[in-house]
Image 1 (cartoon, rainbow, N blue to C red):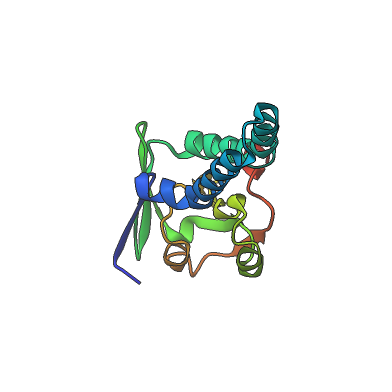
Image 2 (image 1 turned 90 degrees about the vertical axis):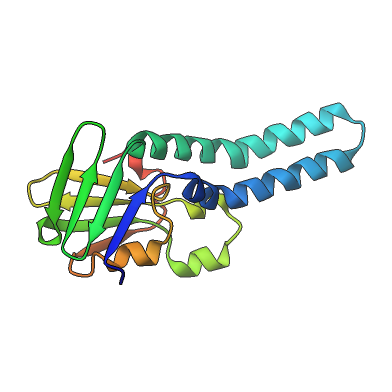
Length: 168
């Protein structure tokens, strides 16, 4: 484990989370060009694809962006610092009561690797003082490296929880 890890939203994490969406978009554009001159068929295909694939991803990205924009998390072996435009708060890992991870398991991710929503997940840290901190996948470049820092924290996994950020 490295001595320090800085977590924040940047272009690399945003691209990482959108890679399959971008691939699907290119595929749909190619398919639309193959359909021919039938404008109604192209429009219908685009609408169906948008409803099934693109709109849920836009909703998730907007939600995650709202929750984490302007935040930075500075992590060391001993403590974690949450930096926002409003405040800077430092916690020891022992101050974290529980970590709830809303993410698909590795088997599902491998089996359905081209499902765009599988790239999205978020983590809720429940602190001993009853505060909660949300960290979304837009901030995390390497999930495994990030989780290493929380080896002493109790973890609960919730599958199919990508959109649960709006609940609880």
